[in-house]
Length: 385
Image: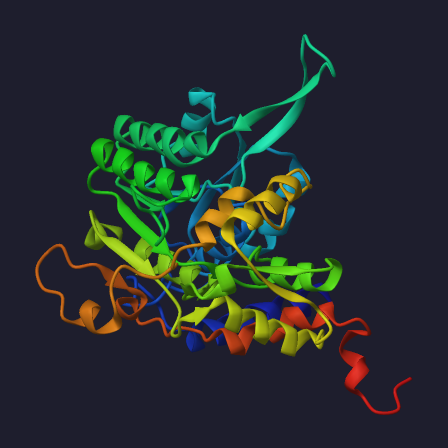
């Protein structure tokens, strides 16, 4: 019986080996040489993999057959959702602290590419003892400057020291030296810091990200569901052009397929359509069936007053810096026509240059916003109750 089973196994292997083509090199414009169980021969160190965008980048890289060195400063439970993205044995999880350079050096190891996606939309704080009444205060763990400037500069310096071939740095389309938002200003400063140390790095600048776990549409829907009033800053007339997080993850993976080709380049990622915040709010209310929600045009100064209170919540839906960020247009640096008419070596790339089609927000958002309906998505089913 064992001999028969062995023969069957041998025959099945011969059958499959004749059906599958032998792949000797990486295919152009595709992720990896042979899918998830292949070996791309590339080692990628990822900082910020446990964040919103990080999970999609890991999923896309897993289909390329790369060996991933995933940095984590939490515990095992914060990274376990990333393990199914990779084949067995294609990951190495490393614990580090952003202020411990040796631990960050351990994460990078012998990586060919380093991806930095570290970021925070609010400054994390923790209680501390003070000498004066009420003897309890708050101190900042990591400021915007720490997350967006100091840590990226440290990673760039380590990449230079350890002779890493390529560095991919995630910035933002809102990055600007004179933006009212400190987060946007430090994003710009972070770009400049990385360029000074590692000038051939690749910079990815997405607009606002949307997806099932986003803090953009989900926060707006949450406020409409649980707050008495949803504020629209200065009427919500500012423009934004959200991009699907999966599309950005695919773009970063395509860069990893041929990183030397994109050295020193900037890639801007944005969606197919721009919206005002008021239009997005109308779309959210339409999907969630919350017509009774109160939408109020709030001057920026009053929105800042409310945000100063809401910022002390855990994962706050609104902070003073978000108010500053949303008080300006959040758009790519150029129009679609200007992107196409660019010439020269300083051309800014878009997702179109990687063969990635922009996903419209209407195609995805319903899948995760309908859960905010009071009766769930069954309320529209006649006779269900």
